[in-house]
Image (cartoon, rainbow, N blue to C red; front, side, top):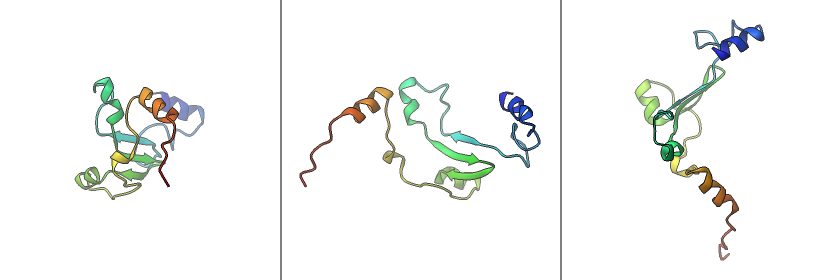
Length: 102
């Protein structure tokens, strides 16, 4: 509803505002519903598909295979991403760097 009104305000309702054939769309498909997972598990939710301007810019390998989509985007393992609560992220940023011994 809000995106449709914005598209009408911009006089671009024929190109944006709703997810329809021949319209541009930006959206993400997640592997879990962040409205129903326990709060402490929200940080473990991963994207399985990202579409920007109607083009797939990321697809997770298993999801892409199941959905018959191309494998696209950054394919590093999710363990590479920083996880945790906002408090843990703040602690990690403020922790002094360890001496690597080099």
